[in-house]
Length: 92
Image 1 (cartoon, rainbow, N blue to C red):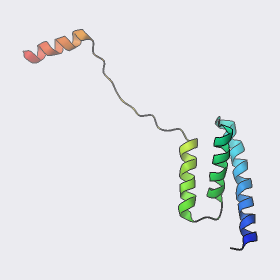
Image 2: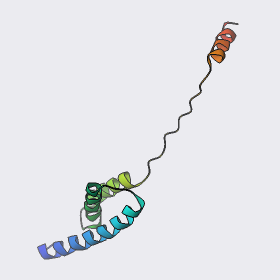
Image 3: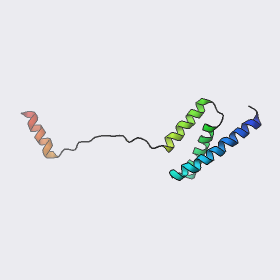
Image 4: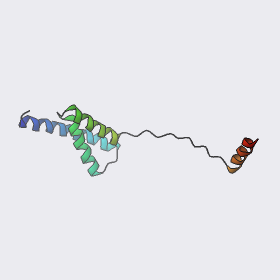
């Protein structure tokens, strides 16, 4: 790819990334540094890079913009009386 063509490609990718960041900022509260970083990552994702780098960039965007699943854990809280009753039942 010629230098001029690469610059034009990066310009289009950056413009697209900036438009996307405007939409993301409306939904997610980001610091200026985080917004700038995500803009760069989205630009890499939208540029003419090797698939490896585009996939890495997409992973970063998803990690920082999508909600993480909540880990579900069930905890049973027994009172002292219930615990003593279970000990008595175990002895019989």
